[in-house]
Image (cartoon, rainbow, N blue to C red; front, top):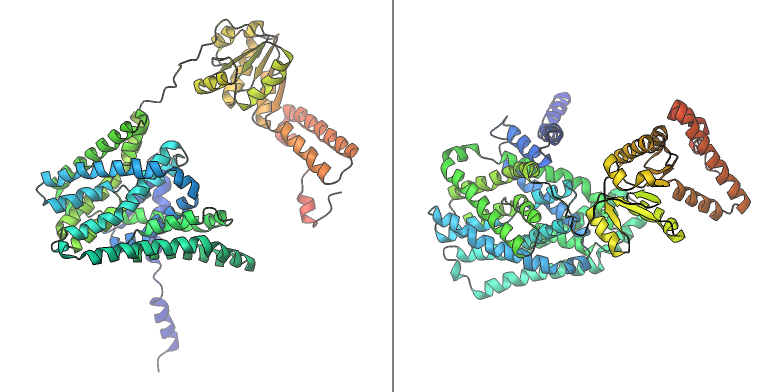
Length: 597
C-alpha cells in the first residue's frame, strides 16, 4: 500500500509549475520600469526582458512561439477596447481614411517592398509574400506608442488607427492570395473560393446579429444578479468568442474582437466592459512583447547575418519612403508625415501568420520563413529606438506667427496677461463697462482664434520685464494675471510688484499653496481658479437639500470667513496651522449615516 504522505508530496511536487509565471512577471516588473525611467519606453523593456529570459539569454523558456500564440490574445483584447471607443457613427466618419488612406498606403507599400525580395534573388511568389508581410504594421506596437504619447484621440493618431484597421482587414484577402500562389493553388475551384468567402461573410453576419440583439440583453440580465466576477467572465467570453468565430470564418481574430467592441460601443455597459477587460489586455500585451523578444533567434541571425543586415534597412527604408509619400500626398503636415513614417516602419504580428501560411503552402522554405521572421522581429525591436531618436533629433514645432502682432506701445487702463478660458471670462465685465483692456498671450493659435470673436490680443510673455513695459504695465491702473502656467504666474507677480509697486496686481491661483505663494510675492488679490465655482455649487447643494435661504446664506458666509482665517494662519505658520478650521467627515463616517442636520 502506498504511503499517503509520500503520495501527497509527490502530487504536490508534480502540481502546477509556477516558476515560468514568476519568471515572466519578474522580468516585466524589473525591465519595464527601468526602461521607462531611462526614457526607452515599455515596449523596448518587454522586448529586452524577453531576450534575457529566452533561449538565447538565461534559457528559462525554449518555445517562444507558443508564448506568442497565447499572448496574441493581448492584441485581440486591445482591438476590442479600441472598438469600444469607436461608435458606428465615428467609424463611418472614418471610412474615407480607412479605405482611402489605408488602401493607398498598403497597395503602394506592397508594390515597393516586393522588389526587395526580387533583388535578393527570391522567386516572385516568395518575394510577394515577404514584402506583403512587412507591409502589415504592428498594431500592438503602434497602439501602445500612441497610447503612451496620448495621441490616440488626436487627428494624426486617428489616421494611423485607420491605416492599421485596413491592414487588419487586408490579412483576409492576402491569405487567400497566398493560397492561390501556392504550387497547384490555381487548381482550386471557383466553388471552393466562393465557399470560403461565404463562410467569412456568414461569420460576420452572425457576429453583427449577436452584437445588435443579444449581447446587451445578456449583460443586462447578468447585471441584475450583481456578480462582478460573472460580468468579467462574460466580457472575456464576448471578446474571445468573437475572435474564435472570425478565426473559424477564415478572418482575423483581432478584427473579430474589434467588431465586437464596435457593436457594444453604444451599450450602457461599455465602461464596465472596458474596466473588466483592461487588466487582461495589459498583461497579455506585455506577454506578447516578451514572446517577441524570446523569439529573436540569434543562431539564425548569425548564420544569415548578411542577408538580414541588407533586408532590415531595405524593407524599413522603402516602407518609410512610401508612408511619407502617402502622408504628404494626402496633405498631411511634414511633421506628421515624419512621425507616422517612424512609428509605422516595422513589420507586424500578422506577418507571422502570413509567413506561416506561405510556408505551409510551399511558397516559403522553412529557412526563408526563419529569416523573414527574424527581420520582422528586428524591425519591431528597432522601432522604439527610432522613436526615441526622432523625439530627440526632430526640430521642435515652431508656432506660426502669421496674423499675430507683438506687444508694443500698449496703453490700456487694464493689462490682462493670459487669454485662455479664465482670461476670457475676466475680460467680460471690464469690456461691458467700457474700460480699455490691453491683452497679451503667448499662444499664437489662441490669439488668431480670439481675433475671430472680436478680440485684439497681442503676443507677449508677461514674465519678462521688457514685455511688461511694451504692454504698458507702468501706466496701467490694474494688472490682471490669468495665465495658466504656475511658474510664469509667480514670476510675473514678483516682477510686477517689484517694478511697478503702485499698480495693484490681481492674479489667478492654481491651488491653495500657489495662492499662499502669490500673496508672499505681494499680489494685491488672488483667486483660486476653482474656489468661486465650488462655493456656488455648495450653495446650490444646500438649497436643494431643503435648507432655508437664510441658513444657506449664513453657512456660506461662515465658510468664507473660515477660509479667509485659514489663509491668514497659513501665511504665518504653513498649511498645518489651519487644520482645526476644516470641516471633515471622518467622525460622521465612523458614527454611521445621519441626516446631515
